[in-house]
Length: 247
Ligand code: NDP
Image (cartoon, rainbow, N blue to C red; front, top):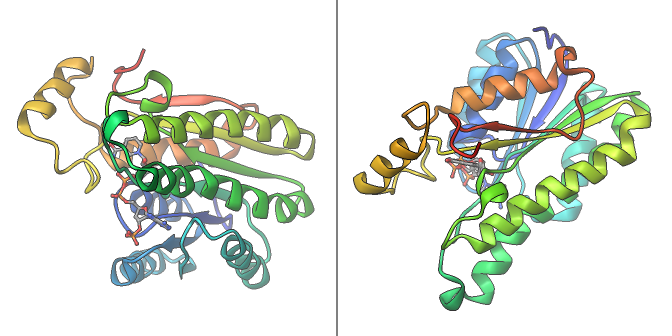
């Protein structure tokens, strides 16, 4: 796979899956910009690692919920690097609660951070990708968006919403050679999942045919495939990276 000189943006690229995606894209030759909300030092470290791989890197403090900021970030990348070829919408949060206990704030925070952000960045990317006569958008959903999960109605709604949004976007922009796909990870070991108890982790292992949680790098490898020309005839697809959990 070759991503030489492709210009990529990964939202939420300071930690976890987003960081692994950014580094993997750079490993295959891409220049990579990342956004983050709070972790300035961690994001700067990711940029250093991208540059150490011989690529260009950039970090933007940009709340994914902010519509105008998404336009600014993408304009900055296109002005400086000349194009945006690949967008990975990865930024996401959880605020779990049972529906009867869920506050309006918990609902709104998760829906806006996980779903509105995908609209913000995908919309802002459309014009530069049209001018560039192509692009690949990869949206990180979750198997919870396919199967649902008790205590995560806000998260599941946001992640299902990403699937519907991506299929619509893929249909609108296919004629411009812009592909849009979804990755639905299962349980991946990151800070988001580190608070799970041993009992819950044992349950996850039991429910996963491959018998273990996933690594961020395993999600990142699928991103590289969807970013590359090897997936040139794939659009509007949902690829589970879940060890078989949701099949
Ligand atoms: P982490 O909590 O480890 O990292 C989240 C990343 O998103 C950080 O870089 C964080 O930035 C960024 N972020 C959070 N809120 C915002 C915001 N408002 N604006 C900009 N950036 C923001 O999460 P994971 O790596 O585990 O998850 C990454 C994605 O993968 C999420 O969309 C998640 O839903 C999805 N996913 C994760 C699974 C898992 O098991 N881990 C399973 C299925 C899907 P900062 O460092 O500044 O806070």
